[in-house]
Length: 393
Ligand code: MG
Image 1 (tube, rainbow, N blue to C red):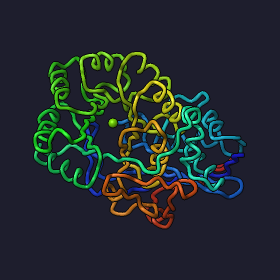
Image 2: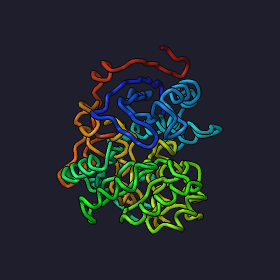
Image 3: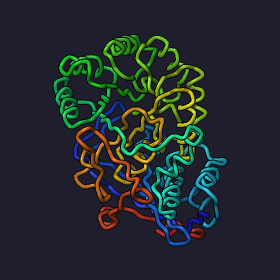
Image 4: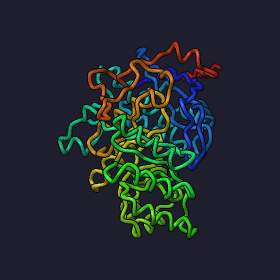
């Protein structure tokens, strides 16, 4: 039984160790919305809403999620009784359009709460939720391969240096952020300096259009650079033109922003819009939908990897658990804490070994790390407690 009594929302500000630039903008410090869920028996779980400050990656932002959770979503689940996290997902999903990252923050927290109370690692519960894994007798990964996203750099030489350093650290795949005018010359410089064997992808964050001849030419040139994938070159909601582009490219298109749920995956597969999926559970409304996406991709032979949203160690714990599922066959965006933060808000911090692997904490219950509540309390700049009957600020 799940009977949530209280959800505390806290917003903290955490500076990145270095600015991160994509086609969507530059992030210097992360505004992070954290949830602390408490069940009727006193069990607690922390979750992280992955929305950013601005609606550049998705329509969800820290502020819209704060509103959605406090006003509409938390009241749907607080004080009610549910059998499973899937039931919570359905309660949050019913007659709600959008607000996927707000729904996910609650729903994923419920998965962790159930795992915590059962004394079991979160990843085990996710595996049990996967029909594909159950039917195929699949087992969890004990560690997950890690790739790194390298933001835009001031010139090709700076990018080469960054990619080289990432490779030396052990990262198994490097993904370069690109955009019109910051693409072919940069990626070619990396290829020429570091060789053909480097596992390389690019992420365009929706910044190209087939209506622009320069963009089309750049995409064709990227196609000749031996990339593992070109991620989300076209608009976030445009599966049709992605299919048209995929027919022209030998390089697989990896869909990120476009995949907002399992139905969109089915559409993308039917249209031929891409051959790989970057899955972020926050983008699809939580783990219930993420597991369905996983299963649909697995059945269709579409490989996946787990993306990142500049999460703290709390959000990373959820991603690591998800990436332990069998169809996450490509290195995920699961960089260790030190890549982003001078000091993370979990203990132990997330680390990566010399082969670029992050261990899945299968020997620990729940999310597998302790939350540094003292540090969070020092960083909080707003907080609200929502209960079944009221919210207090
Ligand atoms: Mg992406």
